[in-house]
Image (cartoon, rainbow, N blue to C red; front, side):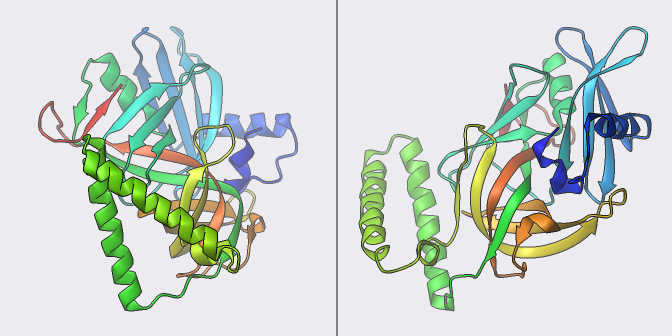
Amino acid sequence: MHKFMRAIGFSTLENRKKLQELLTEVVIHSDRRSITKNQENVILGEFCKDFAKGMGIAVCGEIDDEERFTYEYYYPYLEGSGITSYEDVTVERHAEKESYAGVCDDMKVGISLIFYLKNKMPYVMAQTEDKLPIKGTTLTLSALSVSGMIILPIQKDAQQQQRVKQDSAARNSLMAAARKGDEDAIETLTLEDMDMYTTISRRIQKEDVFSLVDTYFMPYGVECDQYSVLGEIIEINMTTNYVTEEKIYILKICTNELTFDVSINIIDLYGEPQVGRRFKGIIWLQGSINFPEGASKGDSTHSLSE
């Protein structure tokens, strides 16, 4: 059973039989259906059903010549809002099934963002029709969490907030130069990291780590699309799974200048969320690639590739 089903309100699924009944309901009474053919001429089907606004379950599989659907796998999802990144995205197929991972090298984070691709069908269609790379794509991230807590914010005045923004912009500029091979930028970044390490090592002896670290975004465990995050809450919504009547928080958080939505079951969140406070938790990162209308090769600097 999928670990993150409880993040969309299914924390009390008792056994495999109940799960199969639920997946059958998704396929028969789906809200959205997508069918396309891959490069091996296999017809793929995806059935999605919402169980609360913007969140639900997707069931994926194959359709044979007699139009019979064969279930392969399923996953819970949360539809994100807004645009998280304008950087290029690379997509690769998972080894064990017809699902895909996306990779985005966003300089604001400092690492390659690896996420589970939710809207695989447009990508498979473009791949089959030999239309890759597609120019002008953007990325909307979202996440599911089964463990989180609320932490008080670090108090900063207006001058400190402005200085943080300026330092971040300067660092992003240096990161961009370093990626192009600028040796001076690489040296400057190395010295800054050494200074930061020295400062934190000195202050950590007398101060709590969360009073020094405002936000972070780092890989968690051995699965490449799961992360440990600490981010500022900038918007809070609550929704209810209409089947189980479990209440779900949808928190829009900002971490390392990335903004995306996180869903977490109210029973899995320790503390009371408020705008300005911080969310700390483990997330499964998902993403949707936003394809431009009428996109063609060469009409933008951003691209989606294999």
